[in-house]
Image 1 (cartoon, rainbow, N blue to C red):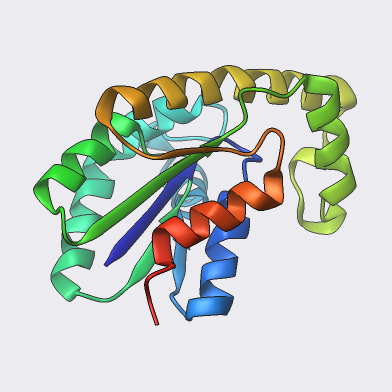
Image 2: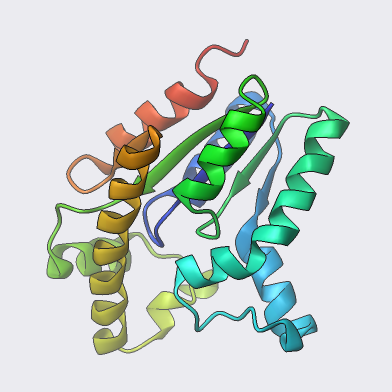
Length: 187
């Protein structure tokens, strides 16, 4: 089974993937690692960290589809997490492989920028956190953009019948519910 976890920056995707690794011993692959491999290793492909997540997803789609097809052929359980998946792409994968893929999207549509910035700063790992090394103005702009992106993802999930969890009000509760939705029925 492949467990796909997508959504916006700072919505809890990596936290959820690490929780599944710890609780269920299912490894995960971060699409951020792949995107930065393109960014740093083959920049001529035009996939880089300055693009909006939907632009990265569209550029990475052929690569991601090929990778997922091969992972499904292998039959191993894996979590793939990252922003670089769009509801349209994921809906097509679920339709093609309904018994082999489970999906959730995470976002935050109902939080103000100031509150989310405070949460980002409070819970950041300063040593390994790219965003908290940026200026306050940059962080506020990024969070504002991700609130808008969350709304787009939420609408896409509704359109394609996919599951969306909002982490705006009860972050930990939403992560627990999303984890339970994905892997709650595994031993």
